[in-house]
Amino acid sequence: MQPQPKRNDMKLSVGGDHAGFPLKATVVEVCRRLGHEVVDHGCYDETPVDFPDISRKVCLDIIEGQADRAILVCGTGVGATIAANKIPGIRASVVHDAHIAHQCVEHDDVNVACIGAKIVGPWLVEDLVKIFLGATFASDDEDCVRRVAKLAQMEQIATRSKG
View 1 (cartoon, rainbow, N blue to C red):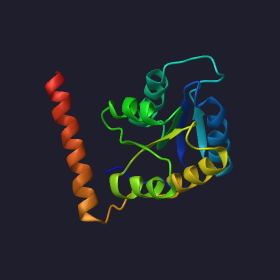
View 2 (tube, rainbow, N blue to C red):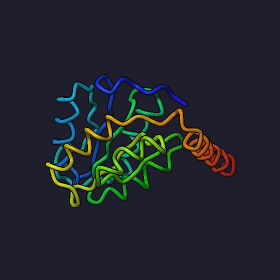
View 3 (cartoon, rainbow, N blue to C red):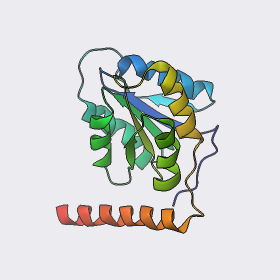
View 4 (spheres, helix red, strand yellow):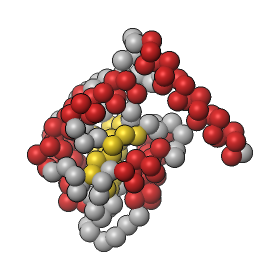
């Protein structure tokens, strides 16, 4: 288990596709206002871009130790979640309500929040970002630790079966 970063001193990787572009600006602004360092991997306008390309860039920051957590914004959050979860070491979740925003971190050690710009507006996304970034993994809960360890084991099986 990686140690949890201080809540107001995280390095964050953020990105989104063209459908998420307008809302991503709010996400970046909220993260910076909270005192976090943000790397914005685009996209930077509404020109169509494939969400797997942005998801890969954002998630590699976590895998390479350049970011503590990440936030992806696409149309529904679903495509970004699927793409992110293809990368070993990433635990991504669609985050569309306050309960999921904290519980996905507390119980499942999620490191990538995926938000749907066509589902969530600027007012709600501000709350979701604050809650997601403020949550910490329940490393003292044996059930949560055991389950996250099993997820890591499943990644190893998938990796071995490909090689």
